[in-house]
Length: 237
Image 1 (cartoon, one colour):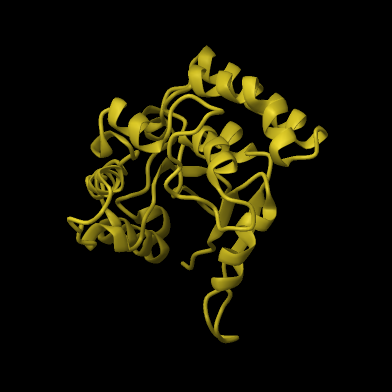
Image 2 (spheres, helix red, strand yellow):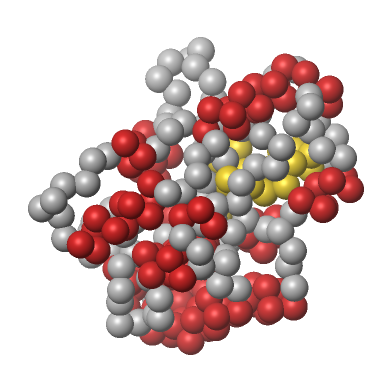
């Protein structure tokens, strides 16, 4: 049957995603190729319902979605087996404990993708349109308003010239998006990392407390039910 993979990075600043795209380039002409896109507007969040990364959906050769957006790791995270040292600051240790509590379905999800590539519509992991709609995360009026608030914040961020000035311009609208749709981690993580990443450094994954936005990664994950509630587990995999 075959399989085409399209990766989409959700980053307002495309330069943040570029090193990861470069690192994933095929090592030889015969290696599998992945189309890598950078969604600087978070349009896929609004149109397809992505609420975190990594997530994926499956689209068949007719353009029909046969699995909704869901957590999509295909290999075990290196953090899962990292030992916590007694010398670590308490907050950092707690952050790793929470990260390690996030359920991993990497082996099963990878096997499901391979089954779909081999069997196509005959794969037992393919859903009907009705099942896809039923399994998709609900989006109410607050979630729709959050899309508009985040987009307005993006426009103000770019108009102000990005950086600290852009964050100041976008702050109230992005905070509004966070408040309206607290389960959408793409909005939160995008805003937090712009604030907490030192200039010239790679994107900050810890996204700790800051003076600009309410909340931060660790405290929000714990408040929302812990690592067990953080991901959108693949249904039936």
